[in-house]
Length: 297
Image (cartoon, rainbow, N blue to C red; front, side, top):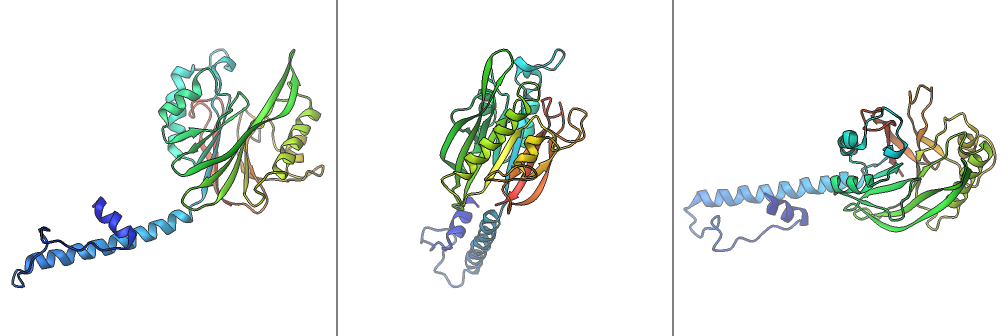
């Protein structure tokens, strides 16, 4: 059947050879002829089916997940260890099989274990504690990438936070996409003005991107609810950034607050087909839920 599907998808019909058991010169031998006709119909049907499947694939939305997997070194006393919860982390990603996963807090070999357990994904080079990006490497090609400092904070020692970004090209549809992954310091680590400045730095980076027509997705642990000034700045409610964003997803009931802190945002004009929570706290294998959005660029 695989051979028939391949032949059908190219739109060609194989010419039977004399060695073909379905081929016969005997006009009185009607069974082989009928079997040849049946095979022809199967090939024709396979070609039509593959054509429809290809058309459907071309129209598929792009699924993006944001997932803070919790670095073991940052776990609270009593939290499950990575060894006890990693299977749930792997299963959470496999459950949705997103095109892209913006990760946060991976460290101590966690990302290496994730890549080994999820061979469909490659990692954007340059990841550090602020965030990483996984992508389906058979579907997407990485064209460009970078790591950019956007917040400096002081918790006794001066530290920098970076966002990681990648420009991707979809191999079958030739459409490009920017994905940004970030982990913003929480209130208390960085001042409110530093957090606002970090969002402004990211917005300027997006505005200066090389491929202006390519859609942009921001995904990560913002350590912020939607009413905080840094998020209101990012969405254009206050200030005047060169790039403004819409929420592709707002998760709920995270850490006993009314709004979530894990968000996926997109540029205006992006259609959100679907969004939600893949798995909740600890069900996901982490102290964060895994959130996702399916978008139409």
